[in-house]
Length: 439
Image (cartoon, rainbow, N blue to C red; front, side):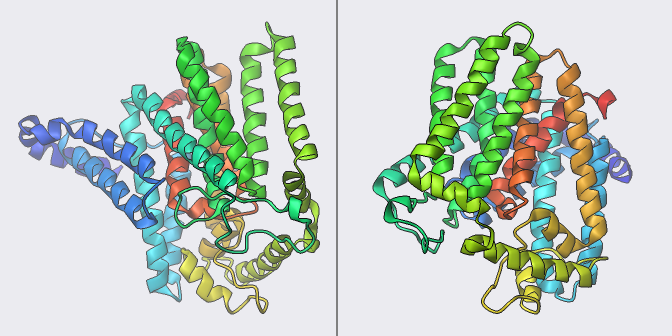
């Protein structure tokens, strides 16, 4: 790669500076702290604040690359798909009729992908730090779970119209919790739980392997609270994502439990299924919320999404090659030409349709190629690897990615930084663990 040639040149010139600088000798620690700060700040800071901390991570990684001898990029196959996606986005930006608005969206995409490269590059030689990163994500998820619990008991009022109550009895109206994530939105919180819950499950498995039983009990308790809080968000897309999470956990755990503990494994699966079924049957507000998924046009939220899908598909047909340019502000401006009266929208409410609308058909193909190769490599690693700790981390990351993508079929909170940074952190974990021969 041409970048590696540049890095090699600057490293030779700056080698003396690196070897005699206390700051540069400590740069790995600073990168690690900045990564943790990005994760932890998601529960309190605005999008701009989180993005600023991510830029610090990117800046520190760049400094390391140009000064530390031997540092270089070695892209994996799925990262080449990601590079292709990014290059197509650049071309889409250049051809956008609303260049200034599209540029803002592009800078967000650039920040997310650069943060991923920074995190993946750091973890490549520091896989021992993955438990701390999972722990940070778990702390954030647990905090939001506890806050969600408290908001439910306090019966917080809706900040906006978050559910169609026209056909509901008072006892069927759910108090939808929204946590501390900004902007306040239960769908955002639900998506955040979907992205981060696998890290909590992963830490529980890690503590079990390490035989740290006190930590295991605490982790399982926090996981239970967070799962319940997920359902309290009333986010139906996150309900589906949660089902993907449990399906993934059952599939991976079968590798270790099916042969010697078949009865225990099947009993646990049946218990979880019974618990979910009982909750839906006996909690009227949850039951009404779940059943509204199948109400189609009779539910105003569903009907709204169908209208947005129809308009977005028409947008894609008219801009199928390069799209309209990235960014929700850019989308909203163009969407005004296609929307049905009274159905304004910030996004396409489907991340794959959104990608196609913003950057065209080839960007969608590149993004799908990235996901396909990433998932394929991860599954191969899980099936073949004998390193149980790495299997736990890769499995948790893969489950998170798949759950977020499934949730993304009916929502676009994926593009919020709180979820984006967790998503790319999970991709970085896979990148650092999966052996080179598998990619």
